[in-house]
Length: 252
Image (cartoon, rainbow, N blue to C red):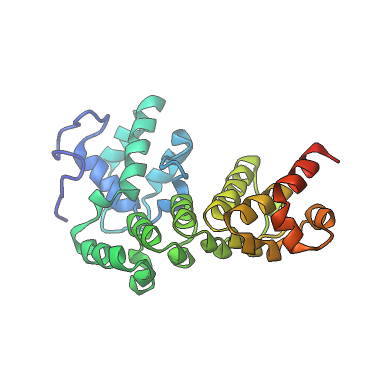
């Protein structure tokens, strides 16, 4: 396998605790399985927890794990592990790290993100997914388990929320996941108020945000408190939105 020197010269560390060759091997071995581990800030949230996964080898059998690599990674301090993990996370999502054979896909997706469906599933690496959803948020339907792609998609088109859960099944999610999910809801509404139609268990604040972004979103309001204040009159709700919001927030 040809070395591409993606992380500097093969045998030099270039400011990293491991060699460029080791970094490239990790990158190429794990890139097809990485996106679900990279958080919405483009980082591995817990480097120490991620490292056992690095040893498993990922799904790319072309780049097998060597005993030397395992020994090197095991010898790193937590600070060094975090440094390696952060660099890898950015590489998994960075267009500049796309391999030569994937560049044709990248150019195609820059023109039409929906053509992600034409990219073989095993070739839909994180960087290509990001390119696709940034061009057309609706390409999110061809992505899964990638927070960065979700955020980018909702910014490009809030209606992409339809490809997410309608409500949060709290029994299956931790508090951190719940905060991220609520952020995605508000992000979608701030870019397209009509995304309200895809949300159950609406908060009053979400209804107000949606209507301010697009008054047409009023017809998708299901929050009982909001509907009670306007007596089901959606035109009244739109015309007196700030007053109704003030009343609900004040508890009147």
